[in-house]
Length: 505
Image (tube, rainbow, N blue to C red; front, side):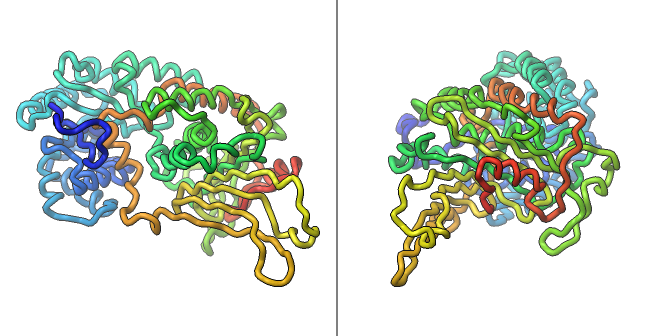
């Protein structure tokens, strides 16, 4: 029963879930250790988890609760965002359980079902459970079938809500995404499926909606009359790490362009929703994704690249083909750039340049809105040679904030104008540090808020954008670029043909 003295509009008190269980499949993997377990600790430390909350880990390792607690302790302490408090961890760790087993092990899933039934009575979780798939996509069907067989996915049998959380990549093309959506929806009802794109949990990404729709300053110029172009950049200074098998089968476009960057594009370009109801927000994003147009000639309107040996941050970096477990003949791209359009009244004629790359000079994700130059400049050419486009830049990471670049007179006797920047940074403007993305998203799953989770239609429409690119790139050798460079030369030439340059991120 809810608090009768509190309304849904009252934001002074935090949102706290009902008593529930979080079941993590693949709990010993990298994602769980680096993100999920620290996020659970931080939520507990902030007082945002209910007293009856429990964590059930499921993985192939043959561990008991004690050994699992040791792994969880090390992971939480290493990855925690909030200060470490032994008393918080002690209370949390008492509610950790571990079940060993493989995904085709009927006995292990029967034990999981029995454990949830036992916790239902002992911890008062009323049958509420969220199942987090921190596992390879190939294992999804096995686990879904087991949840279906045991009845763990059926709320009518369990007496409480049951939700499933699915990590990207959601399929590897349109057809596989459709099949996976059908499989998930056969076991869980669509309203109980949460497809995670962790970029949508970042505070700066959510701030896009506040920036646009809470201010009258930007919306009047947020259209083709005033905007020259939009650039979305996701640059990483690291290589592929231990993801060789996955990355070489996917590449940069499938790995992040299909999900993270197209979601950022949809949020920056969408129309104002009638409310922040999940269905309303997703409907506006879907309209943008459906309106995306590919370049008429993909060979000139897109660029694939692959990094060669070079230097990053003063350290020697091997080339992609020298990375462990990468075939010497691999043509997988580690860099992708494409010119997209949006075929609607607001954005007609405005190019959206999207790029992603590994082994770049530095790590940065940002969205830059470049405005058209003033139609008449009554200045001598020499006075404005240092003046560029007005820009509004949303920095997603690592220096979260917003930058507004505009021209200003240089102090002195002459009328010299050059670009200056007004810089808002989250870390300086607010005393409270931003929650980590998984912290917010795990809490939203437990509460049942789907606003920040793409639905099946968005996923499938994103693949409709990527599939033609992949088809055009098939058999084409990627352009080389040295580690530590901002991508292949062909990427600069793609913009130069239209009289533009990449913004220096």
